[in-house]
Amino acid sequence: MSYDALVISAHPDDAEVQMGGTIARLVDEGLRVLLVDLCDGEPSDFAAPGERAAQARRAAAILGAERLFLDGQDRLLGDTIPLRLQVARLIRIHRPQIVFGTTDACVHPDHAAAGALLSAAVFYARLDHWERVPGGELLADTEPWNVERLFFPHCKMEPPWGRDFAFAVDVSDTYDRKRAALAEYGSIFRVEEGDRLLTLYEAEDAYLGRLFGVAYAEAFKSHSPLLVPSPTVFLPGLHG
Image 1: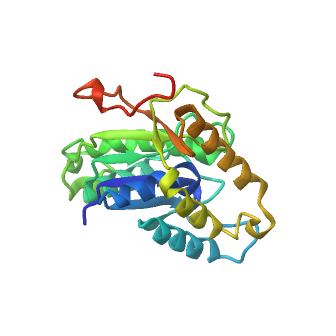
Image 2: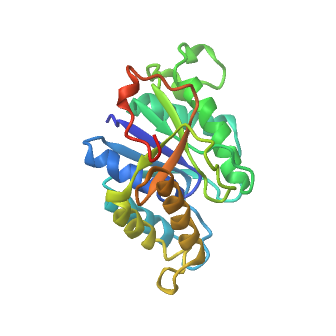
Image 3: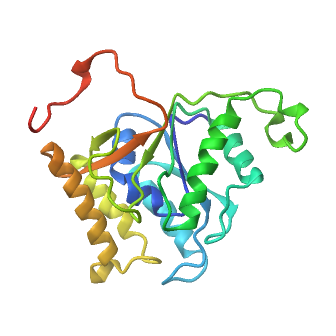
């Protein structure tokens, strides 16, 4: 089954926190989006085993995306060859035009590993002749696939980027769905008590929106420089 976009994250909730509004917007535009978590997020802070994964599935459904989990271990994720190959296989099977990941991460070691791992997996995915590579059997029965764009939303555990990003997406119209998706995660957020982290995350999105004169925005960096057919593709700036 093909998807237009894959979002590769270390844990359940990372995709929603970093780019939940953008995911909803892509779905509204008719794109098929698959969220891939490198682990199931266990152990979680406030729930029994298995509840975080169930919450993650409900959150994905709110955004209109599908979701699957790989078998990594929360807190112990690493940029390993087996995990690179698993992600590369997903890319080759689902053949997305756009892949989203994590970059500039240093606070949580899982996030740091996820960024390097994904960049390697995107590279692996476009290579042929894996049947000739010892240990490359996982990719040998799949065809090469070249991802058109690799983008990275801001990891909100990290210091803000300020204006050091490639582009931002206006998510004002989809922000209620982002809130609703995050509200599913009672296993890690004190939603009913007004979780401090969720308040800070929303404040960052509101600050980014203020740069553009909109209510909320999500910022992205690009693995490669961006090229447009014409400078007219950009929306109006707040100050020109």
